[in-house]
Structure formats: structure tokens, C-alpha cells
Image: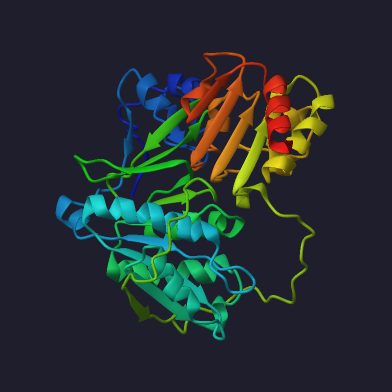
Length: 400
């Protein structure tokens, strides 16, 4: 077991550990000369108290790590294929299969799609998953999987993963995926990286490198899970481009079951559909505007240009905070991740939070009057100039 350990024979009760702890994870008990430190339930194992102790009385005892042979026994990449209310696989599952196929090629392993459906679900999903890159589809049709019950799905996935030992499991960072993945991670005693924007394989160690924005998006952190398996990550929809479907691909479909002992603790009485329009995440063409457009009065011009391009309108976070556009238009780390075929960026500087949300765009055209704007680093075509003048000229050309 892991935990914070205090050697009472060495501890002198000086209190330096308490002052160093920012989370009230250690306290002093007793009176001098018998005063000593002890951990509390608030300890987050940061190690500050260990560094502060002048007599080395405090240590952190960590779980034993799996040996190399045990880690080497894990192989293959799994993708959780979530379905919608109509039983169709969500696009993010296909996006993840495309990236998993590329990672598996580097590792020389197989890609499996994990599909849980209701008993009356159609069978076309398996063919689509294979066409998108899966070598195998592990499918379970059970009425207990007809509803998005994270506990039931977690029990099912863990029962599959323990004997089959996948080295990595990827989930879409949907509302359900964000609820499901932590439940699986806790049960399998492994790590989980949320909202990744980049997934790569380390050629030397074979570890899955999971990159995501950190510290409020001010830097990108690459996280690995060297001592536990499976390695797990969630990825927001739109981060990766969906692959081309290949109907000639061959794959296997394996029927698996859900243990009879799994009983849902939640009974679904019904659903109420939210009134929501189409998301910009589904757009094939997208016009994204930033503070460089000058003022809110220029938005009608931008809407007209978007219509002429057959594109949807997106924006950066400052425009939403200023009340120019609503939150569903926001592109970036705290908004929507997008992967359009064409993205036209007008007056966007390109903060790291924004760039994290457009990594899946196939073609990026950026217009900015600052030749050193970070957005140009992500653009395929770059125009240094006034974005309003460029927009007007482009609109005139499209109407001619």
C-alpha cells in the first residue's frame, strides 16, 4: 500500500512539515517532549513535508510496480466506441480509431473497438468500426448496456481488460466518456490523462505519450504511465481527423458477455431531449474570428463571409467573454475542438489554448496583421494584413 509514513522514533515534533504542507495533509499531535507528526486524510502525497523534515523522519511509501515481464504481457490498443441514442457510433470513436491505427502501426499491435449496445441494436456498427481501422470488434448486446450507466459499462470493460490485457485504452471525452474512464482507471489501478490533444508512441520505451494543456493552457504537458497498464486517455471530439472508411478491410467480430452479477443501481424512467443546434465540431468548413476583427459591428461581415464560404462561424474565448458571440461558437481548449476540412482564421492571434482546439483541421488559412502571430505556426496558408480588408476582398471575389 502507498502512503505517507512518519517514523516516530526520528520525529522531533518541530512542525516544519506542517508549515510546508499546502493541503493540511499532516498535523502535530501531543505535547512536548512527546509531540510528533502524523498524516491526515487530506494528504495528496506531494512530498513537501518529506523535503522539509530536517531529520528524515517522513517518507512516502509507494505501491510496488509491476515488473518488466508483466508490463510486456500487455499488447494492443482499444478504443471505446460510444453510441448515441439511436444506436449509431459517435464520430469521435472513428477519429480515435484512425489515430489508434497509426499508433498500432508503430507498435506492431492490433486495434480493437469495444462496443456495448442494447439487445435490439443493429449490427451495422461492427462493419463501420472495421472499415475505420479496427482489427477486432468486441461487442456485447445486453439490455443493461442500452442506457449510459457508467458503473455498468466500467464493470464490463474491466472484466474484458483483465484477461485480455490491452496496453492502452482510448475514450472520447464526451460527457459519458469523462464519467466512464475514471471508473475504469480506479478499478484497474492505472493512470488516466484527460482531454489529450496529442497522442504519440515513444520509439525508445514504447510508452504512450499523452499530451494535454496544463496550468490553464499556458503550457503543454506530456504525460506517460510507465509502471501500470493499461495506459488510458480521453480525447475531445474533433482533435483528430476521421479516417477514410475502407469497406475492403477485414476484421473479426467477437461476441462477449456482461457478467450476470452486474445489476444497474439506476433505473432510467425516460429521456428529455435538449434543444441544441448543430455543433461547430461537425462543420467541414469553419470561419473563426478573433479580437483582430476590431469590434462587434464587424460580425455581420463575418457572418456574410461564412455563408459565402458555406462555413459555420466560430470565435476565440475573448469574443465570448465580451458578449459578441455565444459559448457554442468558442473554439479551443475551453470551447470546442474542431477538425474541419477548411478553417479560415481572421484576426486570431493563436494562443496555445486556441491552437489546442484546431489541431485536427486539414487546411488552415490564417489572416493577421502581426507577422509573428502564433497562429501562423499552425497555418498552411498565411496572409499578413488587415483581416477586414481581406474579408471584404474575399467576399467580393466569391460574389463575382
